[in-house]
Image (tube, rainbow, N blue to C red; front, side, top):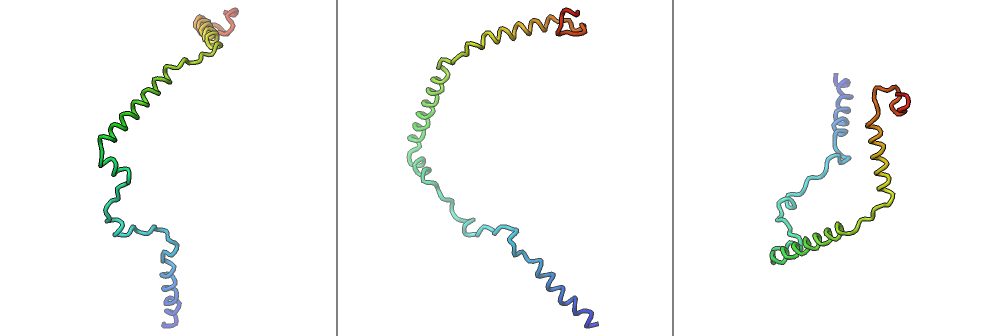
Length: 114
């Protein structure tokens, strides 16, 4: 009986050793001292905390500059392609011709057959 248990005694520790996570499938946990540390304030936040009126005026001036540039862009004379109006008129004529087609006709695109 002791001889039969010998392979089991060898296999069990080998199987348990194979279950270890040596490859690092899971990420390391965040250290508690880093997790509980006081938040650090960025350097630009110090400026805003010291003079909120200055930040407000900077933002308002930046917004005004954007509004002016937007107005300039919309006020620019748009270049109209000279070929567009004739093409638009040709499309209108084609639409009128298609709206006059009798749909009961055998070949609606050839009005002579109707």
